[in-house]
Image 1 (cartoon, rainbow, N blue to C red):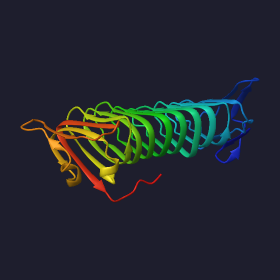
Image 2 (cartoon, one colour):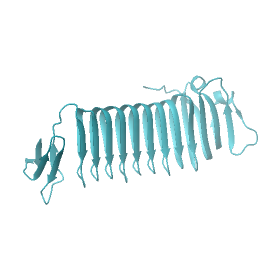
Image 3 (cartoon, rainbow, N blue to C red):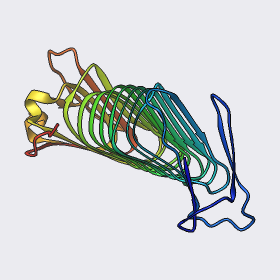
Image 4 (cartoon, helix red, strand yellow):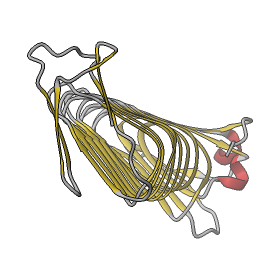
Length: 284
């Protein structure tokens, strides 16, 4: 373990270590924000890191049974971790995951306006939640993913398998490249989604005001049986010819029947739905 303060080795830290626990106390009455504690962790141990106030944490290129990281106002930066369980939590700081995180279970949560930004997730279960901060994930291969925010925006790319999304009050949802089963619920906000395949019973519900724009590659092949309910509905001509609007219904209702086990339901009673084909293929 090496301790640095203002770029120099320092004795301002008090260290207490037992066989299973390492405690670090900065004794400097006027600590520099660049004070650093560098710890080399043995292979395959449970790693737990807790910091207070604005102290941040950086973990990279490690493999262990478990990583548990908690901060108060400090940011958390992790990269290339592999474990059975990864849990990252900040009361007010930002969380950034670079490289690839690989684990059976991954949990991330940030409070206040703290953001969550991830590059690549591989997991059996992945859960990410914020208060008002945004959530951004570049690539997610998780058997079950759950994204939840009170008032933040959610941006997801290369999203696969079973996904549940909740925007409790207000926020926008942007999905670029989706294949799997989706359950998305928003109180208020806009949804944009570019999808390859929709499995089982996928649904998008906007309870108050908002709009949904759905782009499907090779729409006649990949669009499942579909039910749309909205104040305004616009449908690609290829699907319009094969589906039908319900007569004199308000809000508008459109149904596209298909002999297929998969279904899509979109409800946006106080907004609009735009369903169309895209020439852009889905990139895995």
